[in-house]
Amino acid sequence: MSKTFLSLSLLLMAAPVCAGSFASSASSAGSATSGSTSGDDKVVLQARADAAAFVASDGGIRGARLQAALRLLRERRADARAASDMRLAQAILAR
Image (cartoon, rainbow, N blue to C red; front, side, top):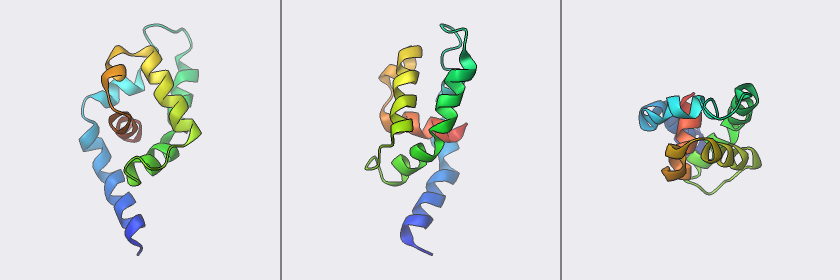
């Protein structure tokens, strides 16, 4: 088993613990300001693979879908604006 695969597996299992209460914030992105949360949720859900790569690479890999989800979360939620990219990526994985 490769070291990278093992690291990724461990990170994916630990992500829900690390994400804490922010996971619920990420899952409801846009609900207060937008009538179209299903589109917002879709953007965040589609970013999961990119978020996993970002977390596993300790921020070295930034996919386009993750960037779009981070931008969306920060546009819609004040608490996301203060969170680091790593914290948001972990929250996306915790969904």
